[in-house]
Amino acid sequence: QVHLVESGGGLVQAGGSLRLSCVASGGVFGNYGMAWFCQAPGREREFVGSTSGGGGYTSYNDPVKGRFTVSRDNAKNTVYLQMDSLKPEDTAIYYCAQSRLFHSSYNQNDYVYWGQGTQVTVSS
Image 1 (cartoon, rainbow, N blue to C red):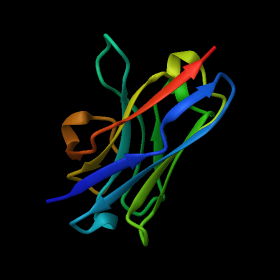
Image 2 (tube, rainbow, N blue to C red; image 1 turned 30 degrees about the vertical axis):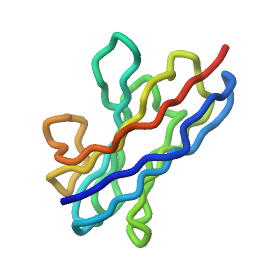
Image 3 (cartoon, rainbow, N blue to C red; image 1 turned 180 degrees about the horizontal axis):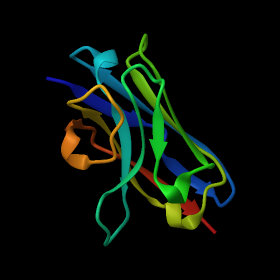
Image 4 (cartoon, helix red, strand yellow; image 1 turned 180 degrees about the vertical axis):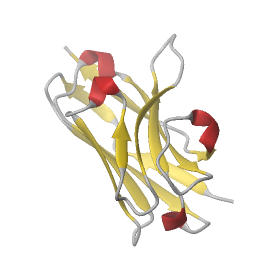
């Protein structure tokens, strides 16, 4: 069983930055892809970005390309989401998830374990 705990969310002004962290316990962290998803009020949960097990490959949803960066430190069992140039429309609960696969994926069905989420609110 894998347990994921996110942190780093909060309230920030538009144009600001936040860094989310997700620490995993249980399992072999470096064997699996990791991803970040978000869910805004009244909307479906959607893909933000992901990284492969080794961290050598990342992918992003178009709205965050060039502003968000996913990275991981396998020695610390941690995946990060660096969020820059934040916009009010980035306001959502952000979840980290661990894949059943090594490679990066945007498909929620590939993810087995999920964190409890951390709230990000961007004011205009």
